[in-house]
Length: 85
Image (cartoon, rainbow, N blue to C red; front, side):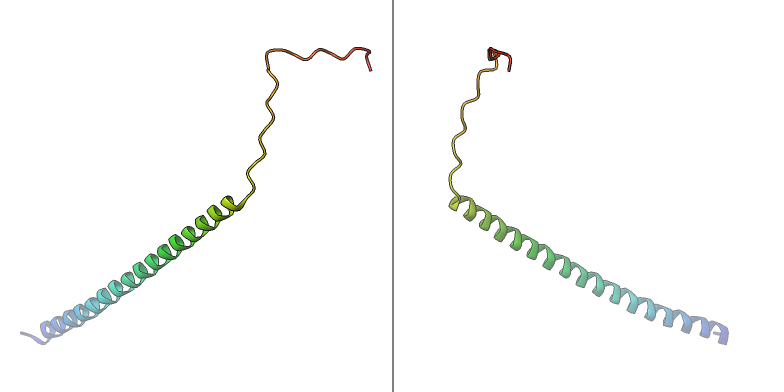
């Protein structure tokens, strides 16, 4: 093997080591991001559950709505007032 071939092989080995290290670092970063995303999703679900429980509690404690008055029948118009006022 000539010196040029040896230098090329050494450069390839060094590049492979650097590439492997970068790949491992990228995998760790992706794993950390996924953990953070899951933690955020769990927090959101927990807060949503608390909000819904609070809203249900408030709705149960609220006064019942007053019954609505029956609407006038739409088929018969009201007579016009007499005396033109």
